[in-house]
Image (cartoon, rainbow, N blue to C red; front, side, top):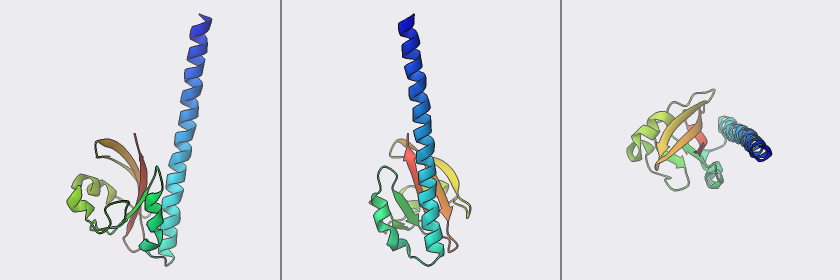
Length: 129
């Protein structure tokens, strides 16, 4: 009985710690995107954030409203709309205030925070399950 209680307690603590880490990651993703949008709205260019496409595990992508990727780990200069229209349709839902969207990318469930700049450029980042 004591053994079951210890195992149960350990599992509960692990779940609580994981939930806390998840919330921190989600906040960090949102802050990263918000900071980039503020910088672009302030005059920076999308290409100034090319290195953010290499951030792991939550890389940044930046695309034009029509889907052309300006910043991405592997698809710069390609159209997300042509490559993966369902993903584009979700990411295009970005608003000036930012919104979380869900989609499947390469057989993984993704949760992505997307926010639109004043110019219409969309900045996003997220995580996989």
